[in-house]
Image 1 (spheres, protein in one colour):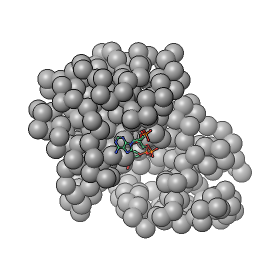
Image 2 (cartoon, rainbow, N blue to C red):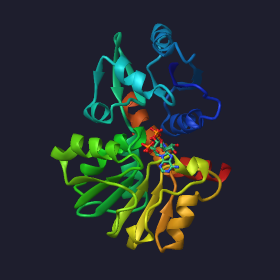
Image 3 (spheres, rainbow, N blue to C red):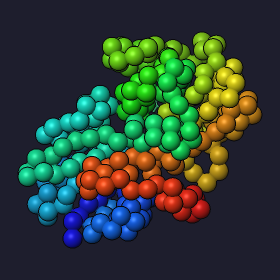
Length: 269
Ligand code: NDP
């Protein structure tokens, strides 16, 4: 049986084994997928061990996405742009590094939420690893404008400069934003501490979608804030399922359906 897994530390909370087991059952793929706890100082050894055991690949989560980027022998364009890797594919002793987080977000927004991004005004809050990973896939949908706003403005400036050749990208502070957007994505970790980035409610344009990458049982504080100001809201559960589907396709060459898996996970939250 072909083996895959998710490498992280901690890893007990990961929903990936559940998601991939459902994908495998649905598509008739004969494979196993397990949680792999790597010691904090032994990520690359853990990967070598998996390769020696004949694993076909692995997902990578906190805190190893940057190390996975360094370790990969070759990188997809989106992994290169993201500076981080969440999917490894082992091929004849070499390691392909990919990043499916960004395309997972974009698929959830365009296909599951039904929002076309072409010509739209997008506000991306945050400039950490999650934000960096979604910029190229967002720009690939030809939005009219992408503004990256961050608490530490220098990081937003750095990211905007990195991607300026790929589309209309500009940096901003939170507090100077005064125009309406069609899509506002919260890629900060502020929701983890029940904080909302200090943006004016006027950023939510008429009919705007507010997307929080975080997910959980209840709406996040960011989602509540956005809903109070007229936006429709969505959490990051769909992104999680869609990035997994993209990894599954890379490994198995089959695209699984995501709607049932999403509904099953939602029911358990
Ligand atoms: P990082 O630590 O790399 O970046 C954190 C970002 O949040 C920085 O931009 C930081 O600003 C900002 N920030 C932190 N606290 C606050 C605050 N109180 N107010 C305003 N801004 C704040 O984290 P990641 O990019 O890896 O993760 C961000 C979020 O995305 C997490 O909630 C994570 O769970 C989620 N995520 C969801 C995924 C999914 O599949 N749904 C996949 C990946 C991530 P500064 O630069 O100023 O420090």
